[in-house]
Image (cartoon, rainbow, N blue to C red):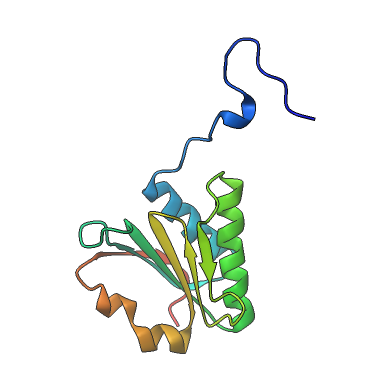
Amino acid sequence: MPLPRNPQTTEHPEDVAREALDWRAKARLAAEAALNVKAEDVVMLEVGEIAFFADAFILATGRSDRQVQAIAAAVVRAAKEAGDPPLGVEGYRDGRWVLVDLGDVIVHVFQREVREHYDLERLWSEARRVEIGGPQA
């Protein structure tokens, strides 16, 4: 059954989009979600000045494929609950490097050796680095 129209307005409830989170709030939300499931070495790289496709990367590390998957799932869940679901998720099945695309924020969740191998911090060294938290392994 369709939702009734509000007699005070011409808008239908399904037509009213939630206000989107700004990129800083979205990055904070993703980082907190990762930390809540024990992500390690959580860092934000502000890439908006040097990349056209995103304002920030969140990098986080998990100790195993299951933990990487749990961290990614927590980020996805938090984004959905905030009304700003991911545009896509890649690498979840293997759990070695999961990318969660939140539009202007890209979340990378790695196993330690994969993070060290690809070294996104070095590749994006011109970006402003913001330490967020979690144990440093």
